[in-house]
Structures are given as C-alpha cells and as structure tokens.
Length: 324
Image (cartoon, one colour):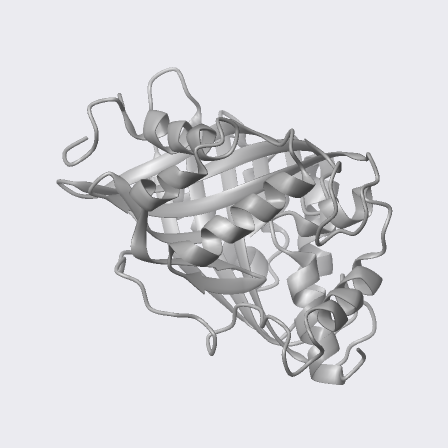
C-alpha cells in the first residue's frame, strides 16, 4: 500500500474502510482527505467534479436515510502501478426512509439495494470514480412507478432545460485514469461473454453459465439458471438492437480462499429502436453505463451481479421525446 496510510492492511480494507468512515461513522469531513479535489464521479444520473457537491449529496442522503448501512460484499481490484490501483467494489445497502428528500416525504419504508463502483486510487485517496446505484430498486421499494418518478424528478429539477443531465459522451469529463484493467484470463472471459451476448449470440449463456447460476439484476431482481440470464440480457439488448456495445474496463482476479472472479464496466450507446425492457420504441438516443461482477466455478459462471440505472435511461428517453 505504497502512498497510503499505515492504517490500511490491503486494498479491500482501504475501500471498505473509507466507505464505513464516511457513511456509517459519519466522518463526512474525511471526504476532504479521501477524495481528490479534482475527482470526477460518474454515475448514470450525473457527472460531478470536486468535493463540494459530493459532500452536499452525502449529507442529503443521510438526512433522508439516517440508518443507511453499506455492507461490502466484494472488492475486485488490480494494481495500476507501484503506488496506485483500480478497485471495483460491490455494496449491499440497507436503509429506512425516515427523512424528507429527493424521494419525497418520509414513508418509513425499508430498502435493500446494491451499488457497484469502480475507483482509481492513489496517494491515500480516490481520484476517479464510476458508480452505478440500483435506482430502479429504490424507487419501486418506495412504492413508486419508475417512469412517473423520473418524470417528476425532471420537473423538480427545473424542467427539461435545467434538470441534471445524465451521463453521456457529451456530458462526461476527463479524469486522470486512462487504463483499461488487467489481462487476467477471468476478466477476458467475462468480457468475451458479455460481448457475444451483445452480438446476439445468446447461445453463449447455456455454454458458459452454470445451470444453477445465481443472478442479481437491476430492480433488486434475483434469478437462477440459463433462462433468467437469457431473459434479462434479451430484454435489454432487444430495446437497443443497433446500439454499440463497448468493454470499457475489465479486471480478472485469482485470490486464495476465493472463487475466480471478474469485474467488467461496459457501455451501450445507440437509439431506443426496439421492443424490450423500455417499452414502445421511441428512437431516443440513449447511453447506458453498466457494471457486471461474476464468480466462476467448475461448471462456468456461477454467480453474476449486473447493474444499470433504469431511471437514467428513462430520463434520456423522456427528455428526447418531450414526454415530460
């Protein structure tokens, strides 16, 4: 851990430790230490640069969900030099809606959802980040309709001209990390599977997935086996049949006492021109950032976690069609 505080034993200890410091231990001020001043945080919903907006958003979230816990399920990482690394971590989040905020008046509803995030770290801090939160799960568990909530969000943010714009190539900002991961075989395997699925080779699923594969998809939807994997990926790609699919980052990892695993960040960019996950085709231009984690066993891919932000996709569709 060259360049990092001696407190941290290793990369997972650092990533999960600073997460707990900030959120559960209320050390929001530590963002000044842990987050670089020029940090770019990209989520499907927005692009934020610098600490000020991140600190304000953290306070607002904790005011609305004061008992929020972020349980670290895994950290998949690779070195990017002698004194830096790229980590892809998976959080299982629990919270109770006890305060007013972007989700409305307090409802007392209990939430469970996941976050997947890629962080590039150096000099004891995070300097570049890509994060996908399961917004669709949050909205549905609050008892709201995803499209209706997104339409209302646009209005609350000031309408189509003034609302926060989702992540797209036009709104993205450059950051210091230019890498694409490592060349571990498991990262290459997962990237190959996702690329073949995106190329309409859905027959790759029964060839590469364990028949009893455990699956976790957007909306906090769980599944098992080939048919559930086929259903999710078919619904997604059917909605954007001519979109360009890109592998933007991949990590494979072999570690003692752990299954072989991989983390891939990918994107889909094109028009909403097909029937599928997002209803009637609209022709809207859409950009999707997704992250997939996977574990492999003797019978192939045995666990998969994939996240996209459905609300950010609907926001792009509603803004493009004027259906606001």
